[in-house]
Image 1 (spheres, rainbow, N blue to C red):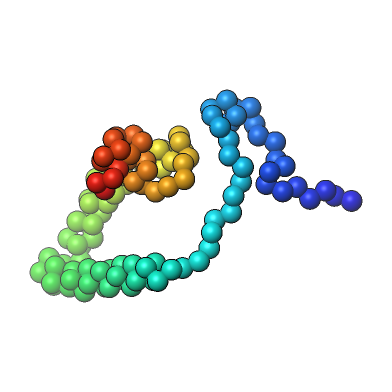
Image 2 (image 1 turned 90 degrees about the vertical axis):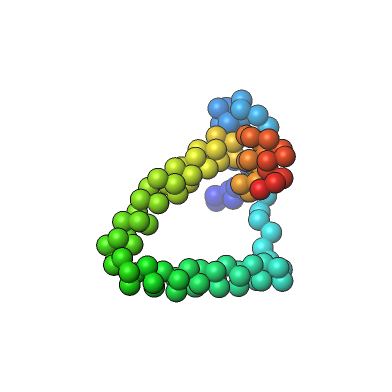
Length: 114
């Protein structure tokens, strides 16, 4: 008969334990509040507005120019930002969002201002 192992029963590798306090596994609380649904609706409308708004640029410059513009923007700004945030999360996994990382790595006031 095989023993079922919960998340708390897994041994912690010595490399992880030497980095700091290792917290027990906790499940994410699931549920949507009214504000979550409202923010998803706002995000959807902004995304739709951006999609409709590029129509004039597409008409004036053409599809290749639009594609190259988004490609340059993504490679120069979005990709390095995502890689940096990924490195910070891998280096120091914390509970919180990008604001918590900004407060930890830059300044608490900067994290609050974001």
